[in-house]
Amino acid sequence: MKHGARIVRRGRYRRRTLADFIRKILWSIFTLWFLSSLWKHFSSSRSHGLRRLGTVDVVFGTHQDKKKRKTSDNVSIVSEGNVGVVCTTQSHNDLTQWLTYHRSIGVHHFFIFLDGNSTPMNAEAERMYKHMPDVTVYTSTQTNEWRNESKILNLKRMRKHIHEPVCGVDRVFVQQALNVEYVIHQMFQGNTDANIAWIVHIDSDELIYPDGAENTFNVRRLLARIPNDVGRVIFPNYEAVPEKLNNRDPFIDVTLFRRSHKHLDAEVYAKYKDASKGDNPRYFLGYSNGKSAARVFDDLLPVGVHNFEHIRSKHLKEITLNESVILHYGFTDFLRVVGRFSQCDCPKEFTHKCKRLEFDLELARKYHELYLTSREEELQTW
Image (cartoon, rainbow, N blue to C red; front, side, top):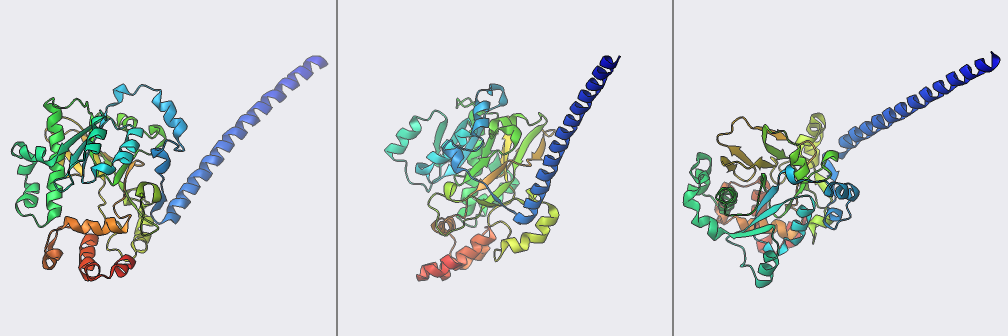
């Protein structure tokens, strides 16, 4: 009996030790989760809308999530739906890094439109794109020949930009929207081999950043998880904040971003937005409404370059992503910022009437006041 009693007591002791061990594990997990949540909240409150994001390692294949991406590459993503990116640009010779990055995050095909004001493509660039089966290059001449078949040019919201243009900004806006519509038309006419399920328009100074643990940094996997009743997905935009005057390679040199108000706590945003923008007229110097990706159906039309609409498929919903964003590098270099003024062909006395961003209007005034009078240092300081 004594021997048997010792066995029972020993068994009870083992069960109690195992239960204690499990409780300790659960308590440790809870503690880590609580501290992590507390730190995220603290960081968000302290950042005043700023966040560090790096793309250099993604471009060159040494991203911190490389192990995750390697795992995801081994998983079949045929059924996930291909993503097509439309880009209107004047810098066709400088897209190699931009293309490499977007390939690494799962973009299937690129539709590159050379703007009417861009320099003609040289022989080297032609050879380069010819050996890229995932790139289709168009010229504005091709889309302009197709203008009579366009549906968006007859829409009320587009007429003011066409029939009452104020400056070159209107021309660019109309051309970009027309380019997106042309790609959709070409796909349903069978004039392109690209099989695209989702389409998005971004500029050559923008990067898609498909953040989120479940996405494994892959935009195809991200959009594959979108419910079937959702037709449009908004990527809020983050604006790059340069920490020096000249950045030769913004995608590498700039890692600080002003976060979208959609990703900030409402109280934190209201409290710090004025302090964050400083002397600037707005929280963002550029646009703040993000960019949308849309399911490609035959009733899809672009709403400018930021959004889309399905004419007949009214049941399709629109959602805003909580983690994935567009990184906008629009104001990262002095010469590039000054170059924005070239989009406006208005005489000096009519500049104030332009349908442009407040920062661009102020830039135009400073450009006439300082840059054209050989006071470049003062403009740089401003």
